[in-house]
Length: 200
Image 1 (cartoon, helix red, strand yellow):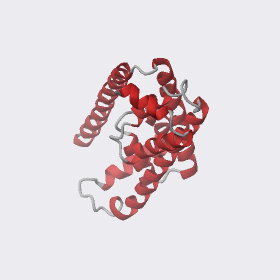
Image 2: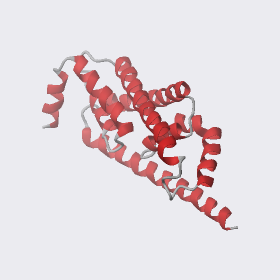
Image 3: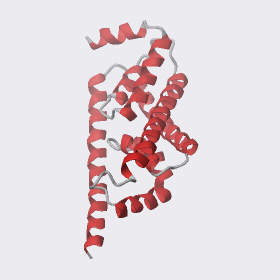
């Protein structure tokens, strides 16, 4: 069944395939559960069987990811003024916001560079980049660069694995689980250090 789907997709106009890949690259920043990574890997298996190429897919998906990232940036910038900085979210203390301001001022662009390699945090990082008003042009540039490296890996994976979707799911699932575990440990450690410092 999956082979039939891939065969059908390979007959589509390359422009349609590019638009689909752009959409999924874009939407994952707005709606994180989007299976964009899997779609990109599957789409990359078509390179050997259709007119689409490595470089066009890489550029289109990287730009799509960058555009989605900057959209969430502006949402964060808008809500940061309307909601967060006016204290309407009671659970977010002014002191905590000031700390994150300092943190993003120091590490913000580095976080953007590695954001593609941190599953489950992409939308959060882009949102808070807007809240903390990092420079939009640099934010887009770093987001697109991060996506460029990550997407190059996924596209290469798709080409190497061909149509072995079960193996692709296994690799990506393992990576996501490891990435989420590491992210949870890091966040837990930061929260613990903050709580311990506040208590003392």
